Image 1 (cartoon, one colour):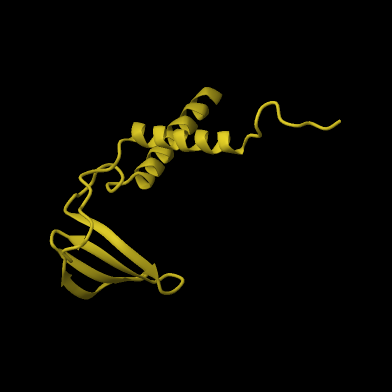
Image 2: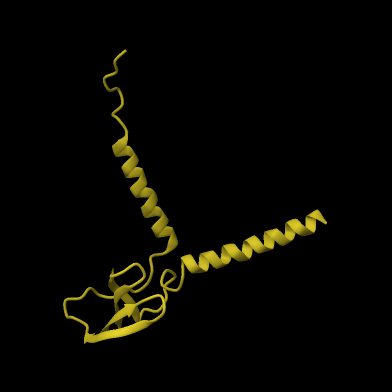
Length: 119
């Protein structure tokens, strides 16, 4: 009976872990829709934001609250806007860049070898 309960707990943990991964690395993180991206946003209250979303060659200024999303303004994409990324960075590249940054930061923080020691 203990083995059955343990197996059930293991399956439930796998389901919860998978749901968390999908939420954490959703469609935008896994190379989702290249036709749409969030350009920027600003918090205007504890649960309210104003967000600019690019859809093809149009920018939508949206008011986002906990209850609804409202289109505040629509305007054409500016000519000097940054180009849309073609896809998300692969996980292996992201991990390597993080490891490289942490390695560089830790080597800068270490004191030089053979430094002056006092007794």
